[in-house]
Image 1 (spheres, rainbow, N blue to C red):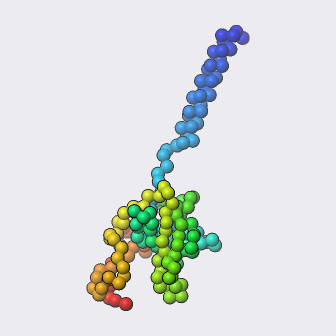
Image 2: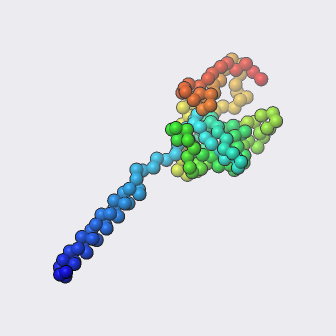
Image 3: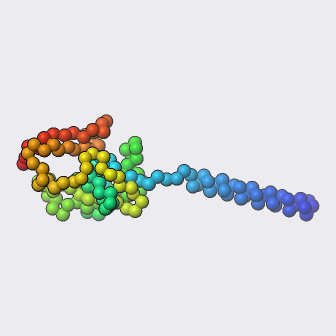
Amino acid sequence: MTRARTRSLLIGLATCMLVGQSVLATFAAGAPVEAPVARQGGKIAIDTGSQFKTCTIGHNEPGAKTSFTAAHCGVEGAQVYLTDAAGNRMATPAGKFSPSPHFETRESSNDFGTIEWYDGVVVEENRFGGAAMPSSSIVYGDQVCYYGFASHSVTETPSCGIYLGN
């Protein structure tokens, strides 16, 4: 083989390798991955250590990167997983759970918990209702609503009723 032909083959081989690497890099990078999104009314899975409990995001505080759900859904420090559009648990934890320090399991009182979302999670504005309000400000005759993935899986409409008191 002549020296010129050898050099030509080596240049061709090097070119193929470079093109191959850029094609492989394109396939490895794939489409851009969308940030996980915490949506009010969305299904979440909380790892309690012995099982995954499925619950609903009840209220979002986008500025604080937190959400609220039921305290009975998890234990202090439990990992929270968001779900995809089909309702399947995502592979990577998206936040950390803390139940209310005043939660009473026997009476189900103070049954709320906080989720602190990790960096990269987008916390959406609330789509059902608006600002949270203390329960002490709700009076007889006020309209109150709730939405949960289990009770409302086929509708985007919350259930509402009239508050009758304690």
